[in-house]
Amino acid sequence: MTYMMKDQGVRTELSYGELNIAGDETYGFRPYQLLVSSVAACSSSVFRKILEKQRVQLADMTTTAEVERNPDEANRIEKISLEYTVKGYDLDPEKLHKNMALARKNCSMVRSVEGSIEIEESLNIIQLSQ
Image 1 (cartoon, helix red, strand yellow):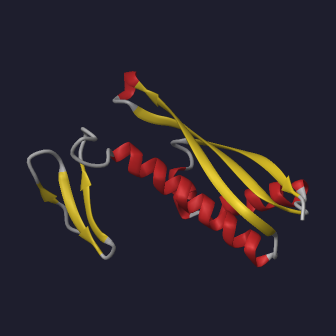
Image 2 (cartoon, one colour; image 1 turned 135 degrees about the vertical axis):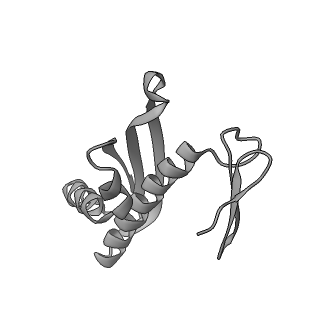
């Protein structure tokens, strides 16, 4: 990837389109937003793929990410809390928790930040009736 300087921040061209990155979000995505988004999106995608392979009847899944930053350490990200809300039919909570742990082990972004950023995960299960 190549990053070009602009008045405020940098930009890059990716296969999906142009990405603008800046410390001020009026000019682009902030770097910490991209890092948190990478962790949340990777983890969610891996979790969903595992559930689909096991034929879990998902109706919807959302992930909420909360971030703790340390202002004394250049606003470094200390912790990312991910809450998965899974809606579906005949959901087995024990199986969902095991699969969430398996997703964590197979998410390249979570594995990349292990040891430097604490990742906390929780699961909210909403059973739907057919």
